[in-house]
Length: 145
Image (cartoon, rainbow, N blue to C red; front, side, top):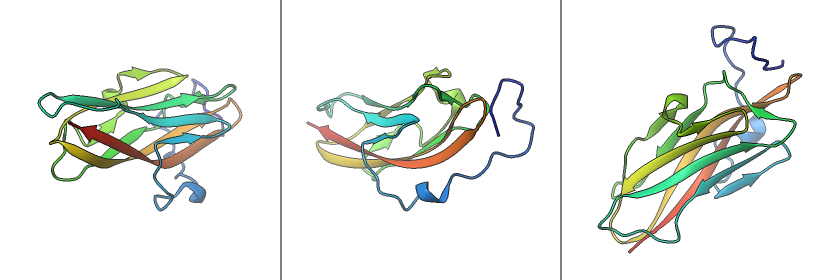
C-alpha cells in the first residue's frame, strides 16, 4: 500500500501499528530507525516560575516521507504535578507538518524537581510503494529549577 497524494482519508481505515512497536515497548528519548527519527526535544533545565516548552519531532528519512493522510496522534501522559497545555494532540495541533517533518510543541507548568512524562506517538512513514504505520513511546525528562 503506497501513500501517494491521490489517497484520501475517507478510504479504508489505516492499518494498525505493527506488533513490534506495541505500547509495551520501552520508552526512550529518541528512536533512530532506517526510515525515521522520532525524538523528544527538551531544554537542559526549566524555571518553575515560567511556562516551559518541549517538542515531539518526527523526521522522515529519504526515501520515506511523513504520511499526510494518516491520523498522526500524540498522547502525553504526565504526573499530576506537571500541567501540560494539551494531553491529546492531532495533526491540527502540529507546529510544523510536512512530508519531511512533523513537530508538536507542548507547553507545561511544573514545580522544581525532575519529572518524567511519556508521549505515545502514532504515525506513518511511507514511500510511493509502501506505508509503515508505527507506534512508539518517548520518554520526556524535564528538570525544573
